[in-house]
Image 1 (cartoon, rainbow, N blue to C red):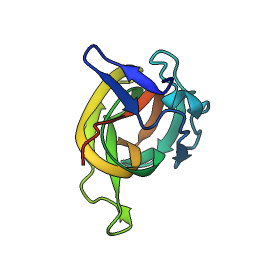
Image 2 (image 1 turned 60 degrees about the vertical axis):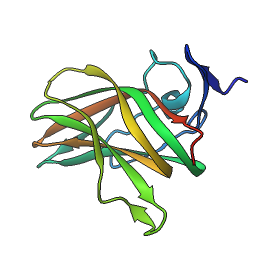
Image 3 (image 1 turned 30 degrees about the vertical axis):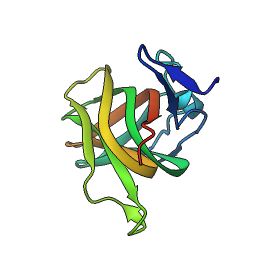
Length: 157
């Protein structure tokens, strides 16, 4: 029962609980990535950052749930940059083509030079692998802290 998260209506299973994501593209990768999926919404990972000479991705977090599930993703991140806007984008692994989908889903964006903590939730989708992409639309130093990421199993075919 320890892997259940209880809402007011019914118990739900978090398919990311205990999964430590793989981090890539960061100049300074976030540390303590085990905090991403520990069910603690208040304790973040360490700050990840990257300095960009033009707009682009400044980091990824990849999660593999081990099997394909119908899930709804929810979480909380802190994002900011020294210029421009920063975005959090969800990309889903396409098992048919064997690559990341060409239709990423923008979760949130902020224009700020100091951390803005943003809770978010997505539509439902079916996937085994998930990628959270951090993107900045300007030449800047961009930052992220991850407080929590959960893939709530909807139990649907």
